[in-house]
View (cartoon, rainbow, N blue to C red):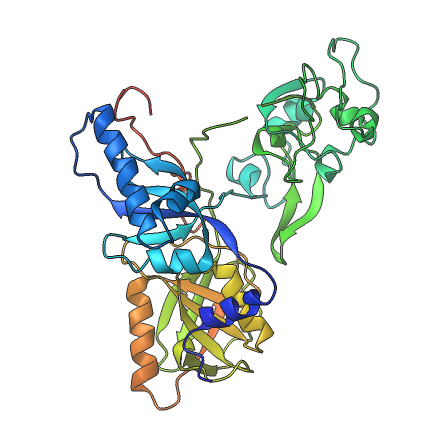
Length: 403
């Protein structure tokens, strides 16, 4: 049997384990209605989304159950819970511009304080504001957020002493566990908890608590971007009230970049992005093949050229790794899409659609196409801070004064 695409491998593998269902965003472009649509106009947009999805599912009623949000005002599209096959089917509709996985994007960095001048190359200079402020000792930081994972090393209370007497709050774990009550660093952290647990379900420290994070050495992501994680006030205390957030805005970029270049046998270099890609020896070329030409599950010692689609990028790299591939060049489908670096299971270079076409041309115009991937963590090579592409850029179309 001929396997026509790398995504088919993934789909085939998952058929035997579970039906893959994800939250997806179906993007349809701009609205045709006026800037101030009536409620009837908005209802028509929502109904059109049900009709569109219903044409690719068993019925319109099933589509209504799948769609949990319609973007009726500022761009045309909807968010729905879809099986992978349904997402693939709706992406073929002529009115659909793109279908992508609806997922949370977060920025993680240990380089902020060097960027702000509080430290230099991991060392704290004598004139650092940190020393003048005693690293926030005696300060209590109040936060409103999803919660906290108390076992995090960032909240280790060793050597901090008892809770200050000026604190008038109390600790209510409300989850049947006493971990929080024992953590001095977080003993302040449950003031006014109401009918819900402070514990963060996602098992991750939320960004608004990070200013009080203590020093955690050798923090890294899959072997990349090593550094010491800490907040801007690491000796301070934190008091957190857990809340059902609805909207987050104002994220910005950092000065650290994760380039992963694809170097072809013709010595042309294409800049991509990826995390944990600096594992291929420089100058050692590997056979480069297009995934659509793969005829078996074994692609040992090859770099695979793939195109982004409804299958999550990380899943593609997992399959390449399981099949014996040594790397992946992942080309975007759309000309104006923004490529974000994520962690992969094999060295990967995520490139633009334009560069992807050039690489594909090389593959088909060369008798024995080869390539290798070269990546590293770079600091100070990009302008920062700027608005992150997943943040709300503003201005607000209803009230321009709100950015």
